[in-house]
Length: 118
Image 1 (cartoon, rainbow, N blue to C red):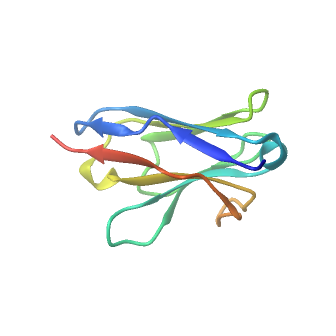
Image 2: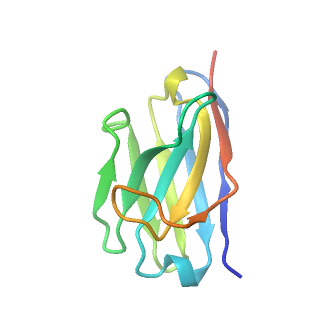
């Protein structure tokens, strides 16, 4: 069964940190580009960060220097470490598999809510 399961979202104050995790089925993880996307209320879904199987990364300008994407190829898991969070980072964050470094593939997780508020 093909699946992506996110975890780690929640409520955090501005300037705080969160770490998102996405556990993937092996068939859609191995050798594939993995990515994190987000969708804020009333806005289109947007790319946050992507990573190749060899560890090359790509980030949206809005998160560069604050977010770090990484992957554990032995455990079919991708992570998003989010530091210095801002209220404008509030969104539902989705894990994605099988796309390119600049656009999503066909496989999506269910999403996890991140709320940055004091």
